[in-house]
Image (cartoon, rainbow, N blue to C red; front, side, top):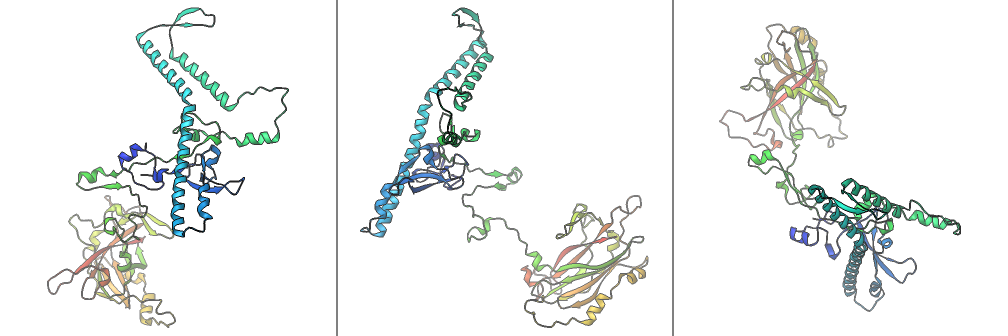
Length: 499
């Protein structure tokens, strides 16, 4: 396919056109100076306003193919612009046909310039082939240990063997002579000739020598190297192959495993299109809008004994009622509920970019006997935009209970026989506050020492009822459970505390 116009082409057609774009009988072209896409322009000549000229022009560096002689006349378009007797639709059709004909003539002019350059460089190409053949013969003589006879300047014959080094030296000397001809390294100064004028110096500056990259691009068209930038021809755009990349592990498992799949339409796979939504992978972030939000309000710890007391705030983000409760971590057969690697490089605050390098997991023995909290029924979320201008009065009793909560009396009341517990402190509308008390949460090392980190994680579980009017915004279908039981969704929660 063409990377400029995104025109698809099969392998047979691409080989016929030598791998070059052939759209509209001319194909896409690139600028020989900046390698940006060029367009076909029909403008008036600078000398007169009664003649039109068709040429390639670059919108980035303002290069024009008129400098290299690739341009054709387009005066036939003037017949349709000043003819009032023709119908407007017929005039448009004939004008488009004339533009297409002029475009083909421009392409023929370009191909003619390329063939002329190749004919001019036929002699140089034959010399190169001669030297290549001579080098092959010399290699054959060297392998077969055959000597050759050469004639020196004194026309004396002497026996000597050809060497590859001598051939390379001669090639270097000839290359140096050719470069001296192109670059004008040494100029013969004649006393009878006057010094160059300012106009001649300005004209010399305008004839800039092309860069190595520009010369290399031109050598893909012609066999002669350009001397000046005025000799640069527009570059045809080559086709690109459609290559796919697949994962070997996915393919061995019997799946497609497509990593890179070439698509000609840049918008293919975009969600703005109506078609193909089920064929593309999507990132679903809807959980942040339906899962109850849990926030750590205040907490206190006793590093010497490992006592912990924390106040959690849970809020309903949906417009439906949610019934839930908190409990201990989910028990698994492997023992640990959370992998230790999940507690490394934890992003706590994405706005301030606060990261905790590592946190130790709370002792699982201290949470085995924790009892679930009572059921919490959270009302639908309050829409602040609808309540603008209304005077909202919070429950003064709830506000007083939350403000007066202190962890110090709770830590003092804990002893060695106390059990961990989850208690509802207060509830108001779509928000509730839950108290977490753990008598011993310190993780001891193999030698009975405390871990070196200052942060530890307390794993908990949040159980949400699905069905019977609860959590309908989550779009989770309720399972058929026996009568008297509730369909619960359990979500793991990790509370990070700093000692």
